[in-house]
Image (cartoon, rainbow, N blue to C red; front, top):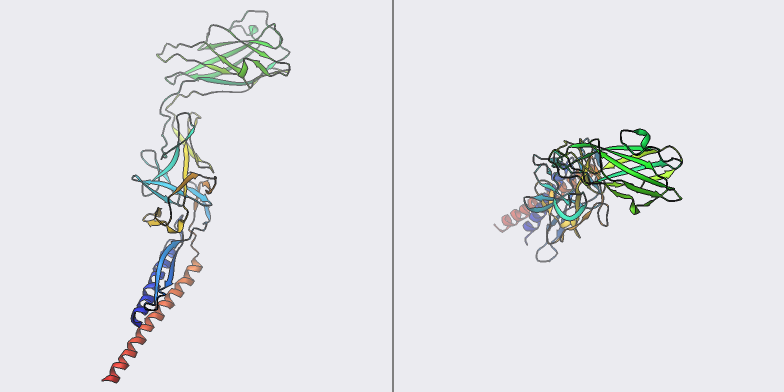
Length: 397
């Protein structure tokens, strides 16, 4: 290469460094932006000489976390990327500015949807990947199947003299109440009555729905430690309940496994049931450090939607930078390794926060001066070469 070509290569390399530094400075306040570095190398072959930019690589040092008022803003503390769906193509980002779009998908400002491991209808996480979608309402009612009672029955209680009658408080020792839902989402009051029988540690259990006593009686037996021994596991099956509103018959199980028999007044600790009226409005979305997405509804239900999918790469510096602050796989980066936040090679997720750019303006200004000096020096070299050649031509003339 001629001296002009060598100096011109230096100009090009300096210009690329200036372009890279300018882009870093421009994105110093862009959430999730990673500083780029121009890798300048020399053309080592003696017949060539000069300099060139071999690559521009991103530096994935952790940026500072800035708290926000938006629970859908997500930041990664540690290694990893969010996986996004860009019209069927997988792309990746550190920036976690998400919002809920008109269809209920969590998406960034470019409409790319956040990917998660999906939850099934019961809220159990699966290995199936899909877009995070949150229903604005609980889509359908869910009939109650289990009522869980955590109570204590008085070990000093005696059997009532009167035969059981729900309208006669003297015919039972204790009562608990809950509201259950049928298949249409209609609420029904359920009362459970506990009657001490003649057997040591023995109790009879009656139930009434909508004020109507259900046929049959169930029995419980506590052991000498006050723990429930019969039925094993604590499950009491109630007779099927038929309502006149067209709902399907309600088949209920009383889960009494946590109930005890100790001395002292009978008391209720907690009573819960697994039904839902449906149609309750969305009141909030929370995402924990493992990326579990949970939707809260006006009826008090909290539904697990999924768990944010994380990605990492053997060589993230070689990821292909795309418009919108996202990157894609390349031959140099290797294929994406997927997993969940907080496991193996993945950092944790901080909800209500954004990772700031890792650009240090002081360092960029120093690099800017160095690139400027290199550019000026190569330009001066070209000017000097022109002067030398001009002198040589004059001498020959």
